[in-house]
Length: 257
Ligand code: NAD
Image (tube, rainbow, N blue to C red; front, side, top):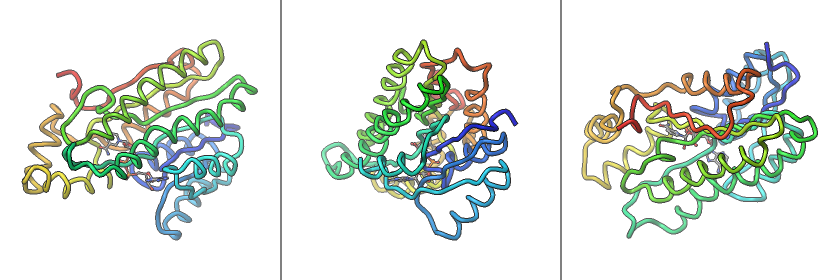
């Protein structure tokens, strides 16, 4: 249990990739702060499971991170965190001329601005302890683009720049900042964008899965949330202490093309 004594906040950890990362960190003894939306009973079960796994009482902060006040409330409630996993994110799929401006604002606020706010509030404690891990869930869309995803691609490219900037600012401390960029991972976020993609491209569900999603992923297999979690766990190890400013793609070869 190499993360005993560490406190970890994983945003968007009630589902999908964030939940898998939270489970991995708890399995190594980290005390978890869970964030995200969901049914109270399901969240209570997650908190109980993570507490049992780590032996440290996990907690839940249900803040809406698309609002600056929500991020500030979360950071105040979470207390001093040693590991910050910026994972909460959303998608909206629409042609540029029809892209709803409120969806643009929301995607940029949640996927990009919330990370800036969480990091600026987490770093003072990490500096005091001279140890920290900032891990951000990017996307293959931090390195390449797809049509109809203007806000998401812009936000994820922005996160790539933010991660590199943090790495340089913090380089002489023992705080690292890295990004993990998955291709298509089978989670609710992916499942929920199928209807909009069907509408935007005039396709069936099977066509969207095979001809749009896995078409970009040469392995033809969805990444699993646990694959991302294993890499996040490695980035928390001391052996990863000199890895900073990196953007690791886990995408079945997508960005190799
Ligand atoms: P998911 O929908 O399963 O989980 C998203 C999480 O974020 C949930 O816990 C949800 O409650 C939370 N969330 C959503 N809006 C929020 C808000 N306003 N405030 C606080 N929490 C909020 O999605 P996922 O696929 O696990 O995605 C997690 C991250 O991985 C996202 O940043 C996403 O962009 C990224 N990603 C996913 C894929 C994929 O194929 N699934 C690929 C690349 C990157």
